[in-house]
Length: 461
Ligand code: GLC
Image (cartoon, rainbow, N blue to C red; front, side):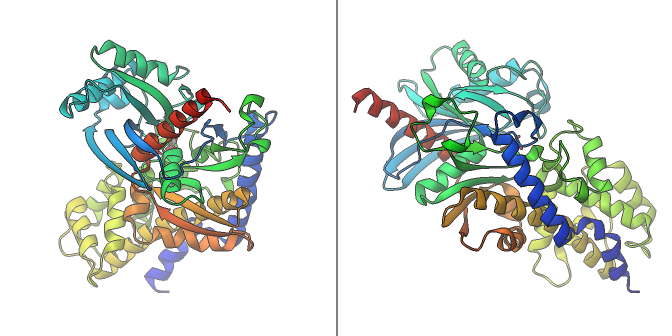
């Protein structure tokens, strides 16, 4: 049997069958139903948080807004100018987050945010303007309105003390108030998925789903208020509301065990949050490179890769002792490789393993392992997305997407569509649209629609 076929067999558990995907679909739909119900929400893994975003952009929004974007590997401050006619301009500044911000105290993190905001406001001479601000805070929160969001847990690489159970809006306002001279009104707190949906809907109104496949992974969608048992009656005069599914947590109450492998269990065990965000750990950028490392390590130990390589022992040592030695970005670089002698794989082998003259067979195999891991993620995401397209139940649904994994990996879109096409009901059509900076523009749009709504209400009927 050729080695590549043996490798294919060895990786079989990372290749979900039709039947497994079908079960994934059913289990996910059940979790959504439970998440929406008031009595069943407690037992649901996907909590289906109410975002209180009930107004959608028309494209005519105008005005100047500030936005903060916290939730990925970097923090950003933005000034967005909505110009009407579906148009917008923006200036932004990115700030690196160090371990002190990611793993320090909450008050420190919020002071850091206020400091960056202050710097940005001064640099852009905005001190004298009283600007509304939208805060994209991409972690699971219970919202009781647009400006009140209680943090339930940190996800991805964050774990700050003294924040879980606190209102993020208050923490931000207090930190801003500690810096005199900032005249800012926090008008909305939102998730990055909501921002993505709003920014795509600004250009393309049938955008009913927002999706992020970056460091973390999550989706939101437009639901009828009638299906939201947990929504207070006073919000039911509007027909729709965006639901933040928080599907990263899918699996915490079962539902994905049948597709979970030993690699997934190791990733979970070594993570900052064992037992939590199990679906996210199979599909998001923070974990895909690590999945490849673990699969490669086992494949090397089984003599399926590097079997003839003189550096086999040091390579095994690196794979064993250096978690995160394979960055998720590498998976995209390799898939983007156009040359037929694997230049990107060679580069990774050189950088990570000090290996200069690899056997072409090993290059081919490494590329294959990367592909299997990415395809599994894309295929599974297509299934859960299809469930949302069917749940939205519109003839045509645009899925707005953002996130580095989706943007940079040339095959991700195709892998997602493969299963979307199988699982979306025939009566519905869908399309996928890349968001233009969902987190920033989306935050400004939420701020704008809230502002317009308030103006309308104050004018009366
Ligand atoms: C994590 C967060 C979620 C966010 C996603 C993408 O899953 O919990 O709120 O939307 O990452 O950034």
